[in-house]
Length: 441
Image (cartoon, rainbow, N blue to C red; front, side, top):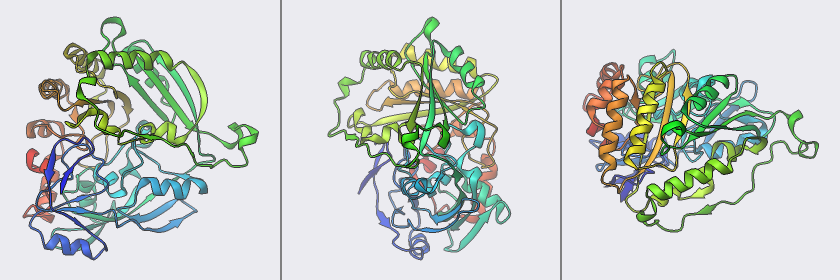
């Protein structure tokens, strides 16, 4: 079948097979010279595409055990984060780290070592994984943790499925008193103000900023800044306290068709950015967790907004010392190009990860969406790459669909060690994707 990532670029004709039992995974591995595991297809680019064999794991979705004394959950790798939330929020538990969509699998979260709005406080998802079970290229199954097969464990975190197929994982949830978030919304009139808000909000668990990527001059980087905490029971109105874990019943809407690409231009993006900035006024409010963490999940098939050509998501991180210089250079180049992004997000990262190929480093990360049908976008992204590399930054493999091998070599200092570990467990490079082949991983 024709498959793609969430960005719908690129597409590839792949032999899709589905593992219907745990024993089916080693059998599938041994019966194919090359394959890659695939969860719910929410990575943006080509990291879960293999024309020879793409192994679907959504049937592997059992919740295995839960320890209510410490929040330790064991589940199969195909379990959706949305199912975990639905099952455990009413019991007073929440994922320690969550990306911007809940429609991802646990295996995918580990393979990409996803981060959230709280990286500066709690790190990435892999920091909360106690152990995992991995099917190797020779058909064997091994246990991995910080104390058992520790190097393989570190290589699997952020390894994009290239060390093996994740079968199961155990990780800790965090306790919450309610399903609500105490949110503060602030405005920053430029990039300096936005970065100052991040620094002033380090004691807040969650922080994120929407950033206008088309403004220049004194208004460059104007932002809407959001910070939040899990609301305590005592912070809810009395009328809400009887059902503190009530899940949202709001119904979203769905993009019914691919939008015409002509609608995506400098003027439409500028108009949207201006309206969004003016309508989000500073305030404090209680919002449900879906609104705070997963606003785009309320829009079904929102990727169709970018038309049939799809979208290119670009996410980079810059080390903290040169972040101001680098972010300014990136925003200035984007604004000059006119290739604006509707969804431009800025976050602050804490210290570097233990995963060999984990994306975060201490500094600032900028994520942007571009229309893949715009011929000039690829050239623009190459220019952004040059800025990022010059300042010692890197790009996120879970979002990438077009980077060069040199970009990854210069951005990931543990790449040689990762390749060495991978060569030991998969000498014939059985686990491969279009991305890994493009980047020489």
